[in-house]
Image 1 (cartoon, helix red, strand yellow):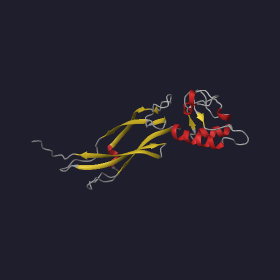
Image 2 (spheres, rainbow, N blue to C red):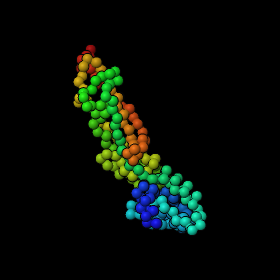
Image 3 (spheres, one colour):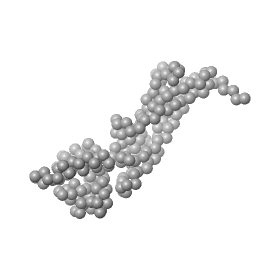
Image 4 (tube, rainbow, N blue to C red):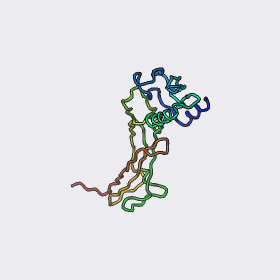
Amino acid sequence: LADIRDFATASGARVPPIAWGEAADRPPNCSEAHCCTGLNGAGEAVDGDGLCPLVFTMDTSGNGLDLNIVTGLKMLARFAAFDVLTETEGKTSGENGEVLPPGKTTADFIKKITPISFVKPTDPPGLPDPIITPNGFENVTPGTQVTFDIAAYNDFVVQNDNAQFFTATIRVLAGDCVPLDERQVLILVPPSNIIIE
C-alpha cells in the first residue's frame, strides 16, 4: 500500500481533505481533517503535505471499486493541484515584413513575465493557497485565477520613417506542457519622424 501511495504522490494524484466536502456531506466516519479513502469511506490521515493520495481501501471482493474510480477521477479534475508557468513564442519578422536583427525574434520584446496575484475559488472553503515563485505559481487548484505582470520594451529594432508592427505570443501552461490560455501581443515601434502640429 505504501508503494501505491508513493506512486499517487509522484504522479500528482493528491487532493486536499476538503475535496470530500464539509461535515454534512462527508461519510459519517471521516472528519474534515481526514482523507475519506479508507474502507467504506473511513477517515485516513493526510500525508506530510496535508494532502490525500487518491488510494482507496476496499474489501477483498472489490465492493465499491466503480464508485471509487469515479470519485477519484472527479476529485482529480476538480482538486488536483498543478503548477502554472508561461512561455513566449516569437516570429522572425514583422507584420509587414520588417526585418529583425540576426538571432532575434519578436518574443525578445517581452523582457519579463512576473506572477503577482491569485484568486482562489470560494467553494469549497479552505483550499490551500498557491505558492508564488519567480517563474510562476505552484500548487494551483483548478478554478484559481492567476495574474502576471508583463514587462516589454524595444531595445533592438531601429526606428525609421514608418511605423513597424510586430506580434508575439504569451502562453500560460499547466505543468509546463498543457496550454491553459494564450494571448497575442501587438508591439508598435513608432516612426522616428513624428511631427505634432
